[in-house]
Length: 125
Image (cartoon, rainbow, N blue to C red):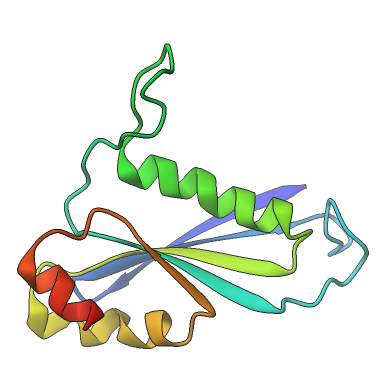
């Protein structure tokens, strides 16, 4: 199974997407040629911070980015490859929100973490 992480700069925002393929383009956990039926977007603030996830873990708390990357992998795995997931960092400047707006609007599910700044909340309005 090959794992591909793709980082693409969206002006001042960043998008992280992962794809999982096997040698014959089959889903490693589901039937061959699984059709994607939905997209989940995890939206994060521009500045990465420690999360509360893993607070009882002996290795400590991961960053919000690390926690979302794990959730991104779980979305694909739990859906048998039928859901695609992206992690998107919200740009710091409100003028640059357009660079990620389309990805967020086209998602079937949006999960936002640690959006506390007024500019971040304005994006969601």
